[in-house]
Amino acid sequence: MATRDGFLSRARTLYGLPLLELLFQAHAVHRAHHDPTDIQRCTLLSIKTGGCPEDCGYCPQSARYETGVNREDLLPLERVAAAAHAARAGGAQRFCMGAAWREVKDGAEFDRVLEMVGAVRAEGLEACVTLGMLTPEQARRLKQAGLTAYNHNLDTSREHYGAIITTRTYDDRLRTLRAVREAGITVCSGGILGMGESPADRCSLLAELAALDPQPESVPINMLVAVPGTPLGAAPPLDPLELVRTVAVARILMPAARVRLSAGRLSLTPEAQVLSFYAGANSIFLGDRLLTTPNPAPDEDEKILAACARPRHVGV
Picture 1 (tube, helix red, strand yellow):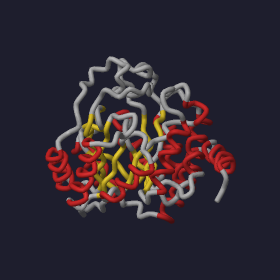
Picture 2: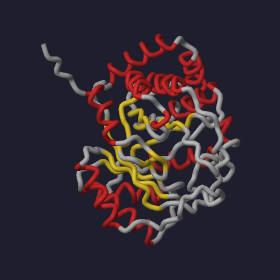
Picture 3: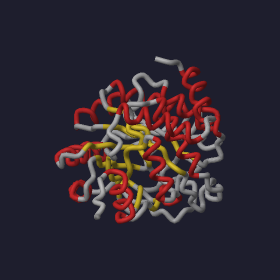
Picture 4: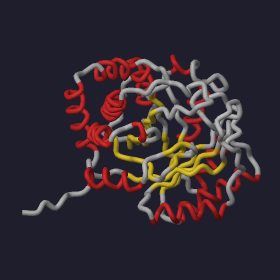
């Protein structure tokens, strides 16, 4: 397997290609490893909202910022089970749960999360959680509960990371990913674009992910949702074609992964989303909210999915 430096050199070369050439290469890799009409539908539910002590500059759930997000305690098991049932009825294949914690604390709340995982699996759905940092023992307990995947994003490059977050190190994140992998849970890890990073930072992030051994099974690519009150609340919007380039490079470097078109899709036109699918994205999140930020309406997603994943009848 290539080293991080090897992946970084390749990522920079790919990112600098003319867009149409990059798309051609990425789509060829995508077709070689995936059915291009298979776009996985996921649902994301905030099971514990707000009050996080960390200082992630993009996050409206940080207790350090005034963003209008109300703090809510961990949801009852029954509400999560009902939401998972509704998600399956709506066509979701993976149900993801996010809790605004710096790290998981052993005790009654973690025990309830384990029950939530079981309830989601009982619906026949893949189960993914993001709970902050984990110990190896906590990862093993999640595995025993039936967890499919653990999400823990690297967010950005190691070089740019300190400009976004100071309360948790890059190596803290990598340690959690190692604990997840050693427990036998699949890894979901990606990043956020539009946080003032350079193209070189995007390449560095992708190289870091690609150098994990084994590579992540799931790579979410988010566009920043600039929330007033956060340090990045006035960040200028990123050109959507930079997202398309990032998805394409991710697909080439990590050919077997699900590349997930995640937060920030309201800033993308339907055409930009279709280009992202062509470049190698093969998963989206359904529902009108992702944790605390808005997401496209279901009918808008249905139009895009129908165009990309289903044959059309053309009359004579």
